[in-house]
Image (cartoon, rainbow, N blue to C red; front, side, top):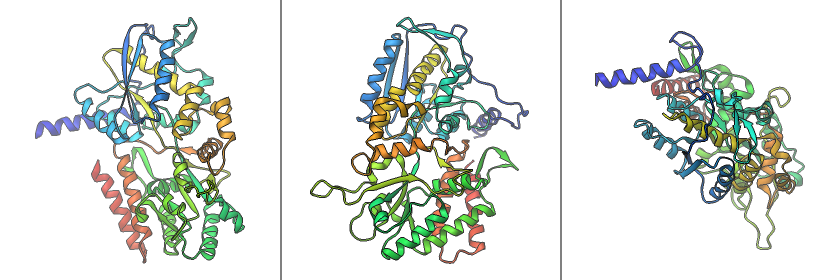
Length: 473
């Protein structure tokens, strides 16, 4: 038992030394991967890629693997659809212990924080900045790294996610993304003279108006309680978490400003203005698309789930109502608009053969900087491209030009997402960040339903959530 404890402490100590200003001396961490002197040497390399892609997406990936091999014929890409995101995480977590992890994997930030406990993820900084020339099979050359034009083409919030691990280094590249949007019953809004809310104050007013028009309704459904809490912290610029400890803790969400917005939303819930996925017992799109019984007329959910927010067609092929899509409400839509960045990034794992890491980078670079791949993958998946230039891709432009609240609702969702490219944020990632998400989601759910939300009840619930987070570490 003593040996196990010492090993755990050593791993945790290693993790602490990987982040920026640490207890290990305060020096900023340095990139852990050095690019070989000649970059990619053209040798035969096989790389493995773990994804969650289903049958609708693997044909797109396969098509672009073929295109990649035209440029790099000696790099063999083997992909494996492991299951869901947590399945990818769990399989890699096991494989890392025996050094059998893949070369590339779909990931979320808290997954990377977990992998970093073992120091398994290769930092990308030296690869991104490398100006070593690479000769492609067609005779053309390019630099190994990214040009300034390529860097600037990424949607900033998506790209910045790769360096949110507390030490300023890049661990991931954005692959495809989603966010939250406000779905609303456009037909109902127009028939009743309602204005789409852009702020939370306006949302409250609209909820009250809908409740008057349809007393049996629940005007708003919000799918993710955790996203709602964290987004409010971002919009209000209040503390949530930190990748490095502040006054001995990573968990900072127990503060008066956050309690104030929870109290406000509790009042909304008590008035019957809203429900959430946990309280409703399912995705709130079910209320939004319902044609009988209790209905909602607004739904805040994933941009990638637009087709689930569209009602089933009538017998004549028409839709019962037209879906409208808008950015989520803001506290300050002019000076501090914020909406969450979600969806998979990709990370590259360390290997004994540095050519495997370089080859993996070339493949990641190929997919993430290709407007054609990003356009095709977005249209097939419903996710948002990570490049701003995709909006000008002829095929993708034709796709978004068809955007409407019926057959092309997914295109409408993508169009809204691209229009708010400056809004995106990501939360700090560290060992325990996933628990923080879980706890603030559960906290908001619990406190919404309190019929007598006293200061004592509020304070105790916040303290308990912080304690659970601290205990998890």
